[in-house]
Length: 586
Image 1 (cartoon, rainbow, N blue to C red):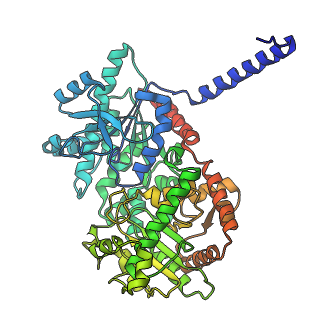
Image 2 (spheres, one colour):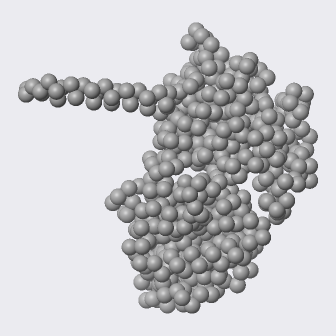
Image 3 (cartoon, rainbow, N blue to C red):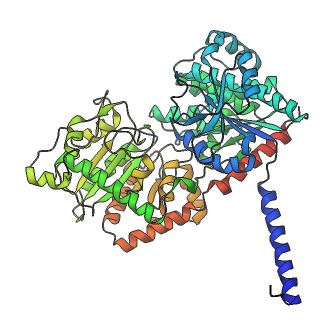
């Protein structure tokens, strides 16, 4: 082996030492500040809303720090124990602990969450304690003033689950301390009011464990919005307890408020929600926990282009089969999506904006507006499925002269077609349906889990086929859908009433434009039609873009998404855990 000159050898050693120092600093920054973490949420291994996305995309980064000392706690909802496709049971995980839990009336199944990182999950059964409900509610009232008298709907199941989650974490904590033969530093993090009882149980019965409460949206703030009241114009005049009583949601608000005030560390996802915490819950957040994304969920390079082509073909073929149209691959596909919160998500604004675009005389290119929002659906439309089975669908329309199907904009049957607000908005907007129109509408009212019967593609796959995504939210504490959009390199638009929109504005240092990858439109209680005009103008502008310009916007979107990764944002969770332990004086 050739010997390096002495000077070069010294330089190499110096470089190596610097590398080791910097590596140590990086490791020091992400070292876990405590021994173990329990995260409780109704949406662990239960895909029903945005918190599922938070936790499932966060898990890989947090699991990389804590390994199996991180345990997610969720509800065991399936009658048949092997029916949950998101959960893989593992009888080798904590078998002795599982037996102890069962003896104490807390049936728990340990396993792995089928997501990147494959973290440990404890699914707890809560059905067995339903007869104890009144006793538990009395205890919560006596100890923390939680008023469960007016409870209804999902309150009982959520609170009984949370109670069991707290009990499970308490037993597990004592078990781990005994195993390690020392007192461990443990944190119990409760997400939303649905996990509040768990935090309160820990606070009373296991005070050596530190607690973090995270609200992703206040129950009162969301309720004000869905009841068509003006949240922002009268914000400073709202009283949380008074509004909870007026909106008949005292119990959820009471549990949420108690957890917020009792937690060793109070957290929320954005400054928008922090204002609500202060106004409605009587406590500001100690630390903000903005939501990130993980690149493990995205496609890259040739794979992205393959999935994108397949997704575009699927959406265009579905519309052509519905409307007997002949849209080409050159069609601009504009999409909105999210949970079915009509006003919160701005679906009313989206429909009116698309109608405004239809009135434009500037378009030379077809526009397909896609609304992908899960509703109360029955099954795929059989007439659509039959037409899609005849291939190639696009050419078939011309060859046979097929007529458009009834309601040529919706892919699945609904139980409440006439009552669904998105349908009402479309039908009431005066939108014109016809193959000769330049602007077309496709409503996909189902979860896109890969088994919907029409597209049979997961949501992220279908998302890649879009050219432009619009999320004109009125109430959006964070806003995962625009972050998901730019993570796949799709330019998007959101509003200043979105926590994500505010984060983008802080990041770029000005009101963001599409050239930044994300356009942010100012929105308040009084400028609805101004927003309609701005969004319509942006869609028309996007339709007139050259392909090279679109690629610049797409590149800017992808670059911006790299600044919102969990590997960076997870440090805020570590700060919250550190503060919780500092504030816990028990």
